Length: 221
Ligand SMILES: *Cc1c(COP(=O)(O)O)cnc(C)c1O
Image 1 (tube, rainbow, N blue to C red):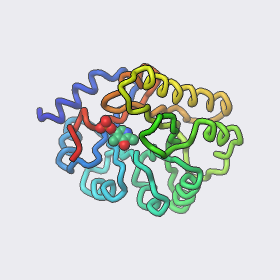
Image 2 (image 1 turned 180 degrees about the vertical axis):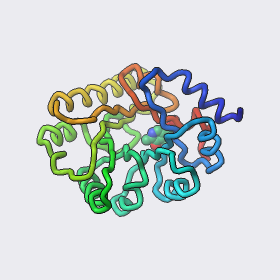
Image 3 (image 1 turned 60 degrees about the vertical axis):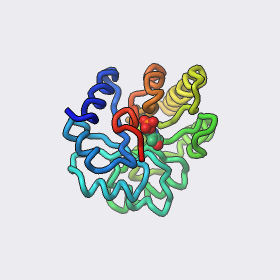
């Protein structure tokens, strides 16, 4: 086995049943993804639209592509239909553009709402209260061709494990609060959190989808 296959096996061995693995392949070459594919990996995460489209065209069609980066509104057309799951919906405007494009193409686009709880890291994502307002007002009922499957978030980038635990707990709690507000929401069951350095803490807090890059592919160029 090659190094990537070894890393994949080592990561998989640490994941409890019911926790999905997205191999975050951004900035890594096609050959690296092909090695992971040969080792059985089928879900890959990309954060840039141009890179996504090149890789989609070059690799087998049974790969499930997760878009995990900030999606600019002028690039929505290139991602809808290509990505199995857009994990990084960070504004209502982006969501309506995705919905409009999916409806125009006659597809149903699956998405996650990105929530911002971390101290820094990214400026993208809904604040927890914004997301609660969105669901309390049932604005998702306007969607025609988009299925909101859950939420995605990141913890603060810090060595302070208590802070990281608290961030993941806040994301998991938010998921529960949304389900309590809208018990009729269907298939709102994904909690995507946890990266190479913090995914065990994320799983302990309730993550059922981890996004792991460095621990599989090594450092990005
Ligand atoms: C890059 C990235 C990851 C993977 O990070 P690693 O530390 O390499 O595991 C996960 N999630 C998002 C949103 C990312 O941008």
